[in-house]
Amino acid sequence: MSNGELHIGVYVDAENIRYNGGYAMRYDVLRRFAGREDEARLLRLNTYMAVDDERMKRDREYREPIRGYQQAVRDLGWKIIEKPVRWFVDEEGNTMSKANADLDLAVDVMLQSERLDQVLLVTGDGDFLQVVRALQNKGCRVEVLAFRNVSRELQHEADAFYSGYLVPGLIPSRGDGRVPWGELGSRVRGICSRWEADRGFGFIRFLTAISAHLWVTDTRQEDSPYASAFVHISDLPRELDPDDLPSRDIILEFDLESSETEKGGFIARRCTVVNRYDGRTGGLSKGVDPSLEGEREARETIAESS
Image (cartoon, rainbow, N blue to C red):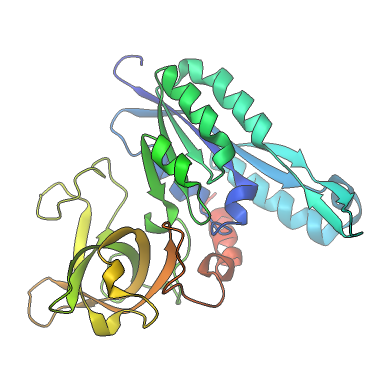
């Protein structure tokens, strides 16, 4: 650490994130989240993306959107490390593709960590477990951010694990998105932090804004970036067993409405379960992933902002 600055490096396993809930992840929002601490300096912003070189040469409709998107991400200050897609035929004769960036990312983060105080790994891949331990043994604080299919061991080994679903604006919510996250009428995500089983209601805590005070989870504290919404059992999905609540492992998405009984209070309506980190499936919503629905919008927003 130099002159009180917190030197941070961010490393994105883009293919892992793309296939596991973060297809429309906003790199501008991710950068703000990584640099949320006071006196933070982002020394490294690396993202490892797969590219089919052969298709790039012959397919203009494939090449131009990728190049435009990559340039928009670069304009946000990110270094893109391309990983060529490799094609192979399996034992059953099926043509498969693979673009594994694990080794490149691991080598880069270990070499570059000499000048870093904190590393944010954006991946859910358990293969990085030893990398996390090695970085910690060198004195680095290691945080992990991911969406679905996250290694349980990776979550526990990291100094902090953040669900990307809970970061405001990082990926789209279901719906039109015209109301900003956290405002009345918006659709947000949170976790049930309290449940009164005998009375059939509880409270969902959600992050209102990216903040350096993520550790202040008590919503009664003035510097807490969180708020709570009352939820009645009737607004929970039928498939969700209330006995599973409260839980930090169940990510709920809901419409934010005003309370009729508490001034300035919130009520969570029409809840769905977008992910569970406990390995269970009870209550998980069916249908299209909201990140897939918002991919084009997210890419266009990134391009416009740059």
